[in-house]
Image (cartoon, rainbow, N blue to C red; front, side, top):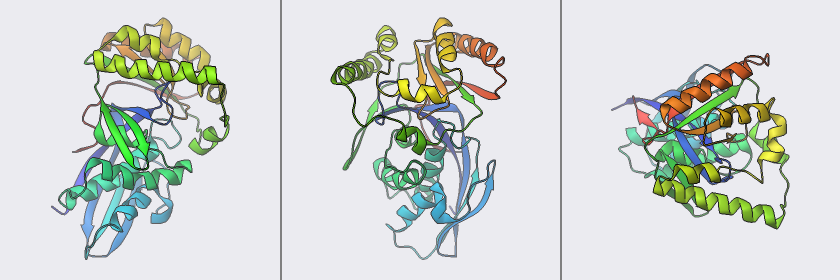
Length: 306
């Protein structure tokens, strides 16, 4: 096999109480990429459709992660990368992660899968760091592993797969403004009050337990962010109105997706998720800000060949 086409999914990171360590994978939105072997050595980005991104390998997150893998193998050929970008950069649903993951997943398939999922994540971290100015894997891990993932440690990298309740759906609104991850990180405090930390890790632990036990009531009582949301929500127009609308429409919980501006909600059942979508559409259509909205079952498979 000399060429492969893949679907690299969008993801939601942090999930309110799991800043930098928790994320889940979406099913209804993602990038497509084509990876092929070429006689010319090295990594070459030959086509980008959708958004204006750099073709220079060292300046593109897909290129940087691909180079990290390429440096770890000994081959007499190279790879070409085509990127069909459906996830807007700066959207808060893992645009850079989808690119970083897509290149290494495709290369690995063409090489006969010499690397496991954790090793692929390690390569992809190098590309993600180009976009966010730090190494983290809360978007990368769910894109590769699927479902919910917990990044226990970065060095050494250890990723835990968390079960997904069968009837869990996500509704995500993406206001068409850009918030750069690096800037959203810069506004966060370096220290937080101990009481806030205690509340946060109690919510985080109970959310992980709720996912393991299919306890939707506990999911609802755990999706609260006392650490990041008070700061980042100020960057997102009409955040409070959207969040309250989602909750009033029946969502279990709602919060900032990644660094924003996307806002996610988790819902029990497709009917509730669609009700949340309809309610949010009605509210946000009155703001004058363009937006996209997605309803998605949690994607347990992750990145895949198409």
